[in-house]
Amino acid sequence: MNGSTDAAPQMATARLVHRYYLAMSVPFLIDVLSLVFYSALNDAPQVFLPSLAISVLFLGLGVGGGAWFLIRPIRQFMEERAAFGDIELTLARLPRHSATVVGVMYAPMVALRLLSHRLDITFGATLQQVALPDILANLTVGTGFNVVLTFFVVAAYLDHLCEQLFRTRGVNIGTFGGRFSRKVSLALLFVSFATMVLIAADMLSYSGDRLVREASADIMTSAIGTIFMYFWISHALTRPITRLDGGLRRVADNDYTVRLPVTSNDELGHAASRFNQMVEGLAEKAYLRDTFGKYVSETVAASIMSNRGNTGRGIDTTAEATLMFTDIEGFTTLSESTAPTEVAAVLNAYLGTIVPVIQRHGGIVNSFIGDGLFASFNLPRPLANHAAAAIAAAIDIQKALEEAHFARDLVLHTRIGINTGPVIGVTIGTDNRLTYTLLGDAVNVASRIEQLNKKFGTRILAAESTVAAAGAEAFCERLGTTDVRGHHDGIVVYRVGSPL
Image: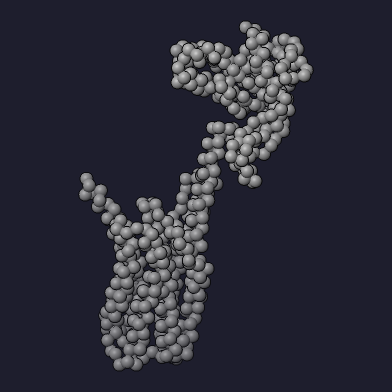
């Protein structure tokens, strides 16, 4: 079991390494195709094997040795024999270094072929002496083409490699020194001018049948090279853009779990890195808003999070609202005869029964006050017919408590006071300790009305302002005007629901 488990990562590492060697063999494969075409065009198969031997020497052994040297530290990381910080720069510069290795090997190989007649070398020599303008053009364009092509082939490989390392090891490139514009400019330069340079050199160097042969060979070679170049450039450049677009779509759908692999050290890689930072910030903001929503309402949390002043305070809001206070009958007696842990369990069960009822009717629980709570309707979240919603919530709370089952077969009754009036929603406190609350005379009156339930022997009392706003006179009994502590004028109160 352990053997098979250990073998899987080793096989994955070997496949990634072999894929790099395959990417580095692209110039060799193109050169072989060029030799086949050259031999067929000139009807000279005898030049193929000597030229192939030179290609194997430079592009096979030489480039292969350089590829082994470049991939070796990356392989050590994949085999957990090196830290990512030790190979990060090597990984980020892999396309550039790989292209340099190919350039160093390809230039002398082409020079040897083109100068063979001038140096009296017969092995692997061209069929005819090559003119100096053609030598310079083929050496420059051929070397430049293979350098650029190798860069983008290895960049495409690096995209796949970094994606695998991100998925399996959770690492990303964090160093950015490359320039996307340079890559695109270099690619466009060769695609646009390489063929013209070769044809111009042919026209300066030859005439007659040889001009036709040389130009035909250059056009065919350029066409094959352009196809290779276009495929690998588009592959290397479009995949990161497509991946970034997909990530943005997921974020637009409120998916903050998405993270992107950083597969290059240019602006595209930097954009992917910044995308990850942005999503982490959005995820943290969403988490904080959700967490705040457990302590204050989601509306208040959103207001605090969106406050551009970054003071941690919500935006003060004034509106007419309906306020509700609740209190458990006989809770003091229950607390005296029950262990604190059991009291907490009963209280949580009680709140778990009535809070969903309030929320279902559009109310917001602003705070828990001992065995009671303070809820509001229409502030901080706007709610049409808020007075009617508060009365309906109070009636449903009583029904829910009648049907609820609590520990030790306790029967809990709650007293509810409701009032409607102007209030302000405000964040109060110091710089390091804040709370959101509603302030106004209407809040104080609602609290006092809840306490009047004891005087009238009722379960739900509502102020006349609430009953009138709700149009609930038909099922509410007017109890008259009563004094309210802390309030100058008397308050007309109504009993809501059936008499006890």
